[in-house]
Each structure stands twice: as structure tokens, then as C-alpha cells.
Image: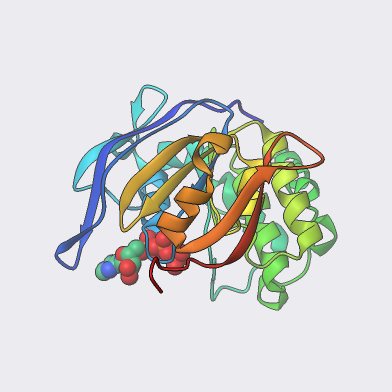
Length: 267
Ligand SMILES: Nc1ncnc2c1ncn2[C@@H]1O[C@H](COP(=O)(O)OP(=O)(O)OP(=O)(O)O)[C@@H](O)[C@H]1O
């Protein structure tokens, strides 16, 4: 696996329907760190992930991976740097799990375009990725027949087979049961890549991320180490929820316990 590189967003804005969906985003992710991207529904997490993946181009500002301006790179080169696991990956093609994972090797091909044309190195990387994401035994199954969680793990395998330096995950655990959530994030941390994961579960973010970045209505309202940013005041402000944040009894990471919707003063 490749080592992570520094990911930097400078002044990035993306507009649609006549408004800024995300605006003036400045964010630095150091090599090999895991950053949790937090924020309520509609706050701009997927939009920012798409900018980081090079799938959308900022109206102003930019994204740098190491010294390279991501949006200035040819798509093939970009795909060798950045891997994306989308929230809802879908395809109408009738591919097996192995074939989906083989798609991750396309950016590494030189002059060979067929998915069927795997080099021995491609086959070894794909086998590793299938094993890594715990989907090796599903390798010959049709993608269309997989459960939501199996699809999510298959997409992780595809992104890992891509051998990127930056891994972007958009709500990667939303189809996973608790055991697979913990397993998935442990595996992702073990990759040592510069990782950004949009997450709704604050407890998972507290347990698995080095840093968190919090979006609210398209603005980055906080970013930094988990224990500095993930406070009850921030959770009340951004999510409108009263929560208690205390040291976890078993480790030094914060433990988030929600109490209920925030009570308005005077209500
Ligand atoms: N192409 C578009 N045209 C118009 N509005 C858009 C477009 N793309 C996104 N939006 C709007 O931008 C806002 C941010 O969307 P985004 O999907 O980035 O939010 P999110 O934080 O990922 O939300 P969720 O937690 O619900 O997945 C939403 O209000 C969405 O409706």
C-alpha cells in the first residue's frame, strides 16, 4: 500500500442553483491521518468529498495532493492518487464482485483498456484487496445480488485495489452492522493512507478519527483534533442536540452520549 500524502484544500467554493453549496473551505489533512467530516444533512459533506475526489471542480480555490493541483491533473493520474468510496455506488452492469474490484486497476493500465486484461500484478493486488475488505468469498457473486453492507465492503476493496495515496469515504458505515462498522474503520486506519470520511455517527468519529472537520450550511465551522473540536457546545450549536462528551472509560478518546434535542432557553 502507498503511503499517504498531504491533502490541502484552499479557499474552495462550489456553487449550484445560484448559491454556494460549500464556501471558502480551508482544510489540511496531514499524511496518514484520518479526518472525520461531520455536519448535519445537507451541510455539504458529499459536495466537499466530490471536490476532494476531483469529481467536481471548485468555482474558486483548489485542492492540492502533495505538491499537485488535483484539478489540473489528467483524470487517470488523479485516479492513481485519490480513491473514493461513494455513499450509494450503483451500476446497471452485470459485474461480479471480482470484476468491480478489478475496475480499481484501470488507472494503472498502460495502453490496455480491457477490464478482462489483467496482468499478474493486477490479479495479486485484486486478491489482496478482496481479502482486505473481507469479500474474497463473494468474488464470483453478481454485484446486483449483494446486500448493502456487502456492496460497501466491495467498494472499499475496489478503492484499495486502486492503491491511492488519499482515500475518501462518503458515509462508509451506513449499511454496516456494528461489528462490521468497527471492523471497517479499524481496517481503514490500518491502511495508513490520508483518509477523509464523512460520518454521521459522532461516537465512531471520536473513536477512529485523528481529527474532525465540521460543516454547517456549507461552511467549515471547526477543524482540529477530535478532543478539541467534539464538544457538547459544538454538538448543540451544529446539530441542535444536547450531548455529554466525557473521557471514554476504556481509552483516552472522547465518549459522546446524546441526551435529547437541545432545550431552547425560556422554552
Ligand atoms: N447539483 C446540485 N444542485 C442543487 N443543489 C445541490 C446540488 N448538489 C447538492 N445540492 C444541495 O447542496 C446541499 C449539500 O448537499 P450534500 O449532499 O453535499 O450534503 P451532505 O452534508 O452530504 O448531506 P447528507 O448528510 O444528507 O448526505 C444540499 O442542500 C443539497 O440539496
